[in-house]
Length: 110
Image (cartoon, rainbow, N blue to C red):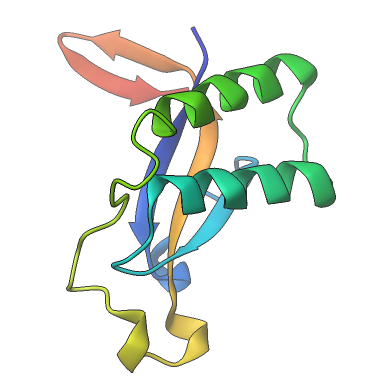
């Protein structure tokens, strides 16, 4: 079963999931769940993506689950502090549609 998930939160130089269609949202320690949802919706509405209608529905359901606590902090890691970094080193959250496969209790992405 497909699901929308956070693949990684890191600097762009470290992300290696570009073989997938991804949505990248800039993060800072004050980023709330609502900020993430607004960023995802902006990407889906204004930037061409390779997501199908079914996948967009899955993404919408994920956004709905985040909005159960809209003011909750999505990213609370002070190791990644954008205030002291040049713009090219901003931390991003990378999201994509995944289809987890389980084998011997370990999850793999397909």
